[in-house]
Amino acid sequence: MSANMRIDGVSLEPKANVYFDGKCVSHTFVLADGTRKSAGVVLPASLTFGTGAPEIMECVAGACRVRLKGEDEWRAVAEGESFNVPGNSSFDIEVADEPFHYICHFG
Image 1 (cartoon, rainbow, N blue to C red):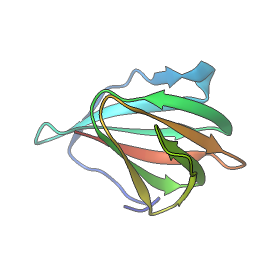
Image 2 (image 1 turned 135 degrees about the horizontal axis):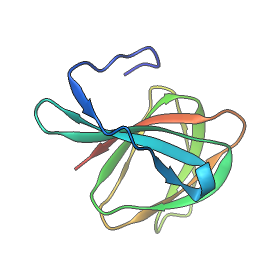
Image 3 (image 1 turned 90 degrees about the vertical axis):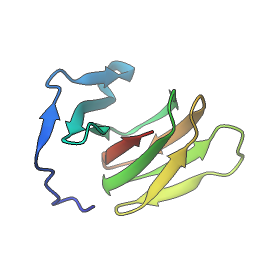
């Protein structure tokens, strides 16, 4: 995916998901085949997210550093890259200067 991508044929849940006092905001959308995803932005901050289902976090603009639960090393993630998070887990994310824009693929 790219920052200029367009996703056609989706059903959008217009109420935003707001986390960490507005430092992360996303919108859930559903594809025609029933696949649920979200598109959002993380503003500069250091946050810890929990997961229920497995997730693939795809960076569409900006950059961040991530560290999965149980790991010691941080990994840099930039536009066009992604990282996988297991279900029933968590990850730390650090966004430094520019907002981190993402698509979250659930499942």
